[in-house]
Length: 211
View 1 (cartoon, rainbow, N blue to C red):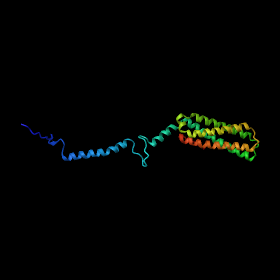
View 2: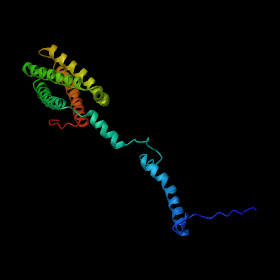
View 3: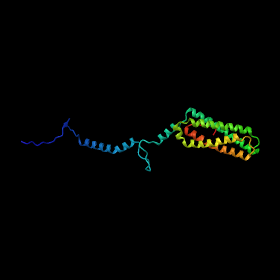
View 4: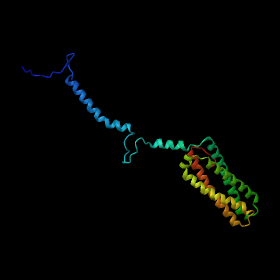
């Protein structure tokens, strides 16, 4: 005799293993919500979506984190902070010497200004030493991050080295126009140096005075 097999849900404590109809609806609703939320969760985990305008960032990239890393890389050491402050101070003295001797050379038609010129030569030499020592103190990452400013200071170095050589070799100048020209060229180079000093200090997180 053949028996007809009828599937019957197992019963647990008087309830079908599928639960009630209300329970089934709740389970389906929860599943739908999870599926809908999955893309949003994935997007959040991968650093958010692309900014408006379509220019997205690479996964894990953060402009703020990049700026912070740059600041850490360029951060001046305690020794570098001391060096750049001393350098700025000496450059301010150099600027004043240039102004004074330039005004004198114009006013007195380049009379014997050997004392003033000698003082200027010493100040130029001190400034040159400060600049060279500071640039030599830069690490490779610092030099790479400050490449544009360092390149400009190389031009300053060349211009002031020439000015130092001209003023040292000229002795007592009787050519007023030539002497004034040399001083003005040195003054322009020092002005560029001061601007570069401030940029270096800003990039390396150093507060300086005298600029």
